[in-house]
Length: 211
Image (cartoon, rainbow, N blue to C red; front, side, top):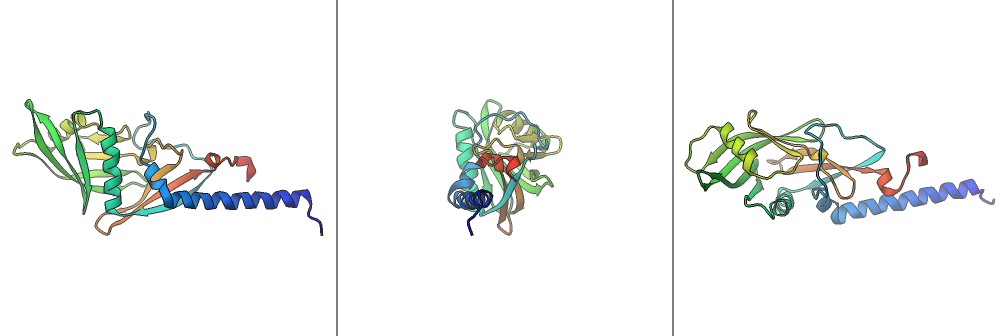
């Protein structure tokens, strides 16, 4: 029986959709995780702002602490390239920030341990566990005020000295591919790190009226 034009169009649509989904999976495996943390423009949203929802598919990307270490510190190297202040992050059983702060016309070593708490919207709050600046005895809040003042942070990262915490609004990151990322699991002790990637259909050239 000869197929109608409508049947041919329908089959062509599903074939096209299959290849699109296959391409997405290949991109995820080969390099999507290297793109999600690389912002290309400044963000004017504030922590916790709701991101506009649109038709999209969701994928879970799992990684390890070592991979996350490499990625985050590569991002920080780029962020701090033209800055006189430098710091790094270590993901072990907690989140460890290491750097230096300018105090009294000199610099002193900074060490801060944070405990991560994933929020319902996929962001994460880093609660301060311990903090030290060399041999100086300063209130924790005062040290975090210095951190907020002197350590360059992405615009989607907010240091809150009064609460002694850092709000990391990963859902507000500007991502080159127009994908959106949120945190699914962040259990450092179990090395269970998973991120949810939201892929808008419009990014793939699929308009809402197509489905």
